Image (cartoon, rainbow, N blue to C red):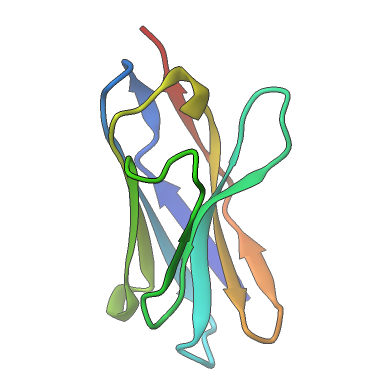
Length: 117
């Protein structure tokens, strides 16, 4: 079993920045897995914001490209999401996600991000 612990959400004005962190703990029998962030905005389905593989390759949603940066520290089983130039449309609950290559996946509890002037 794997647990994901998120931190870094909060309230920010448009144009501001936040940095989300997610630490994975528990039973790892492999170093190969994907970590990432999903977002669920009010009235919308949960959608992928960005993910990153063990080797460093990244998938990032077009809506946040150029503003958000995902990174990870494999030694610490931690993934980060640096969010700059935040917009009101970025408001939502951000969920940390981890998926092993055998398809097992785990979710964090979510952290609220609110962007409002």
